[in-house]
Length: 406
Ligand code: NIG
Ligand code: FE
Image (cartoon, rainbow, N blue to C red; front, side, top):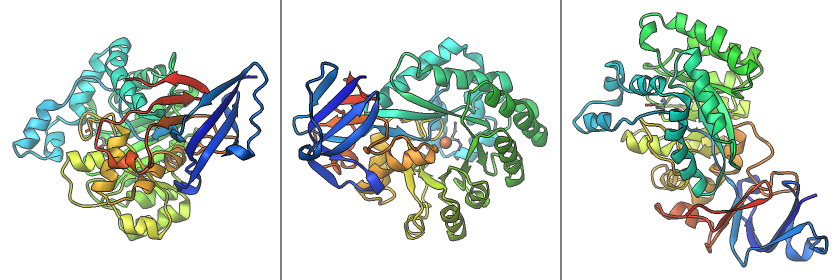
């Protein structure tokens, strides 16, 4: 059995969302799973057996592997032209209504073969991994027909093959109405429910289903149908909820016991209460807020008051968040949303795991995956304090050491 012994570390376990440190700590992992964590004096550090690998942290800060729980990083092309249009005064919604926005990425993504799509997406995955990300959620949503949605999910899964990163895939067929269904949104929702969801479930291509509940997306009644189909196939649900307007998305997500409700800028207190009762995690996406120059803040005080767990993610996508940096998202969660660094760090570890319905990662405790990151930092708050350019010393995936990307 492969055993890894981490010694001389300053460990932020992130248990209960807290940064409290185990100074002079250590960790034992066997076959990729943590068996114990604690002060060095309490660990069984017997290292006689020849299969024990010792990793001397030399005083490094150690955090759980970071988790990006909301990305759309599989896409082709870019939307720099639309960025220029917005700088000239068009709004994100105007561009979408004129057939640009998500649909322009759909055109480029449909045209790309699987290998090409993978080649274009790989650098975004590499960028996340270079910051200590060990688990990434990737949504489809730029295919918008069964063949292309499944292609995107396959490409997403392929980014994990031959790589130590874990990918969780989400089917986002209900992202936008493709041009060929113009004026026939309900018929498109039939396609999502009757063809895409069953095919993705049968082929093991997705563990969750998401939808964009919005004036430029799908109505709550349509989302309800998508969620019912997801439930029938045993898939988790999550929702792009209340990003640009309040359609009651948070309450709808809660009604279906969604693992997460994401964005939430326009969510009111009733929606927050519903999330709390359902145990749904709020995923905040400050990079999209920044990039769209939004002014309406998500209901942070209410989320705290009602003890809704808050996760933070990049939303990495070409339209609203061309950003493959989880630490930038953590920094913006503090600067723009006024989260405390400890909350931001919990948002990219323990609560990000929860937003994916995963219970085997996100903290450093016995029985969790031995996914952790060594940082040459004094204070864990530096992870959210520094604006860009921070890289770990080393990342360990399931107990296996891997030199950090430089
Ligand atoms: O999370 N809101 C919908 N989906 C993405 C944007 C997608 C795009 O513009 O390409 C988001 O912000
Ligand atoms: Fe998104």
